[in-house]
Length: 294
Image (tube, rainbow, N blue to C red; front, side, top):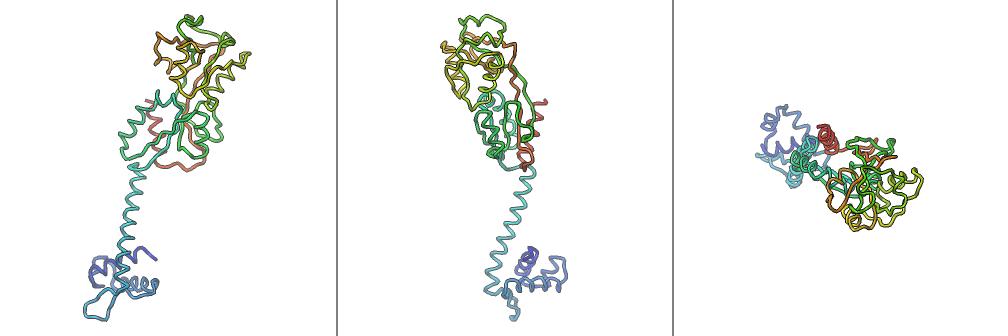
């Protein structure tokens, strides 16, 4: 069935005249009559009673006109909705973020994005960076923030932050007054780490092993504020991104640079390679790039 047939049928029904409808549609009357006849043949029924002085819809025609108008309305809505999506007026996006990233970088970024696109639904999925990688790979989220390196055969990446990790200790800890410490100086310390499903857990453990010792882990948590409180209560030492250290109460916690080796904290926005990206996802990536470039 041709959509034009429905449109022509609706116009003939509105005019109750093939000649007037043909004039409105700017086509010849024979062509219009043929299109309506083809529609009747496809449906297997007569739509117009042409035997009376005034042309009328048959019972079948009355049923078809209701559905035809509804179909044409749906097509107009489809065109309008598709236009809105392509022009980023509506849609949704799921963004995966590790907990610390959410508090440091994303509140203003998401706020600015939603001010620009108020009808876009943004869902933030907060998990550890390792799980975010998995979620992006499996399509559970559209884009995510990960700790580099990641598998570049699987992901497109946009690096946006390169920081260092620092040791945090209680102010009365023997290392608190130093400007910097070597990682090997921490071999006898009790570490409080993020849980194993966080990429930072592996990064710190690997760095310690490369420095000749396996870290003693006294506690693990998924909450940065809980870890800092445990450090403030002398339950161990922790290693935090420097950006997060700036938010801590310096009277209760001291941050010390780590050297020999330093532990980099490099972040990137990632999305799945060779996977369809929605218009909203493409626009968010573009917006994200512009935000961090500026």
